[in-house]
Amino acid sequence: MSKVNVFFATGYEEIEALTVVDILRRANIETNMISVTGDINVVGSHGIEVKMDKLFDANDEADMLVLPGGMPGTLNLLAHEGLTAKVKEYYSAGKYIAAICAAPTVFGKLGLLEERRATCYPGMEGELFCEEALADAVVMDGKVITSRGMGTAIDFALALLSVLKDEETAEDMANKIVYRA
Image (cartoon, rainbow, N blue to C red; front, side, top):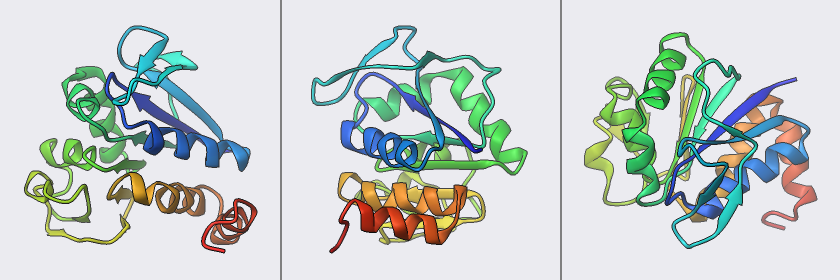
């Protein structure tokens, strides 16, 4: 069974984060909501407070790390040295890392996109420092997965599901949630 850790900082984008958690859990993928704030409850960019499963622990391993966007959530993720070290470790080890909206800029600022294609929230492409910035809903380049924003959250979650399980499972989930019916 796959395990995914989704990291929450104060000011995260609620729909981006919770859509990933919801869809992956529906597919029976162990998905942990992890606070990087030191508090078990984290408040999103629109004032929605959510209770996390865990507090950040540098030793907590998973098959994939996911960073939701939102402001100032993205900046707070970037400021967390333990998390950025973990992201670099996963990248170096060839493990999956994924980010949506403004959060792909964390990968860019860590120098992880220099030879990759990526996408992010429109207008933030200059902070990707990538080989090629695309306007696609989801960009998968090797084991780095990026997406544009709240409106692409379901596409992003289904792309993660296709990697963690398979394309058929992702397609089945899309049908079950009546996505683009």
